[in-house]
Amino acid sequence: MKKNDIILIAVLLAAALLTAVGMRIWQMNNTRDAAKVVVTIDGQVYGTYPLDEDRTERIELPDGSYNILTISDGYADVTEASCPDQICVKHNHIKYSKESIVCLPNKVVVTVEGGEDSEIDGATF
Amino acid sequence: MNNRKIAFLGLFVALAFVLSYIEYMLPLNIGIPGAKVGLANLVVMVALYTVGEKETISLSIIRVVLVGLTFGNLSMMLYSLAGAGLSLCAMLIAKRTGRFSVTGVSVLGGVFHNIGQIIVAMLVLETESLLYYLPFLIVIGTITGVLIGFVANLITTRVKGVFKM
Image 1 (cartoon, one colour):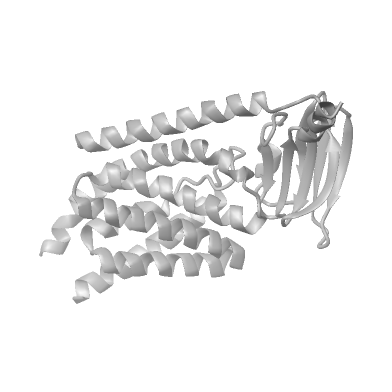
Image 2: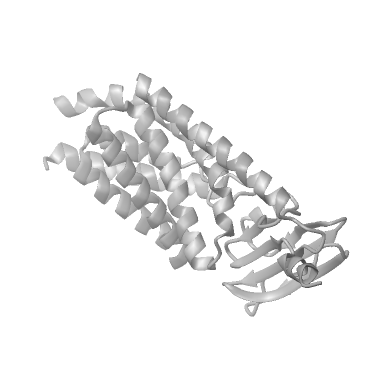
């Protein structure tokens, strides 16, 4: 290993850490009480569900594959899926704005939206 | 290209193919889409430092097409092609600058492989939220890059003698 290699590794790790921390702070500051869970399939919106309401939703795809979305205690999680890699099931539950769970084989994306709508409503009062 | 090079290139294609299959059977499942160990990158690294640059590019393309046809589908091939292409570009540039050793080149390869895959995923799924995985993918790419680079260095120093004969 050369000195340059160590510098490269240090810069990469530092950049990753900084962006991770920065994004987390941004996410925490932009998540409001009225956060929603938006499910899209192949870029098309499939459904929107409030994050503060416990529910289990079966996301069905035309070809028979599925993902099961569970919302409980303010967290959204994919608890079961028909995809082969199961990355979406292994993924941690999410609650902050712009956090997402992705299922590449099914092209399903579950994203938390920070509830910006309610803020606009509040401001018009 | 002499016969020795052709023979080794064939050997490398076979090796990369087998390593891709092993990775396909033992996926790195940590809940992050696009994260890969990149075992096949080991062969690409060794080829880059022994057979040559042009040959490595063809090795990479042949591997992606072969693996895609055998184990995956068209969209999987697209992901690997973007990952392999971007990673190879980064490695070629890094090697040509002469500022990095095998480890540095391999780290850049690993990081850019993950970045390439996430870019294709963002285009396919039409969502920018995948961008939030980037820091984790950079960390994973760096770790696997260091490991692959270490092993590639061990192999390269031993295999290089064969090409000088």
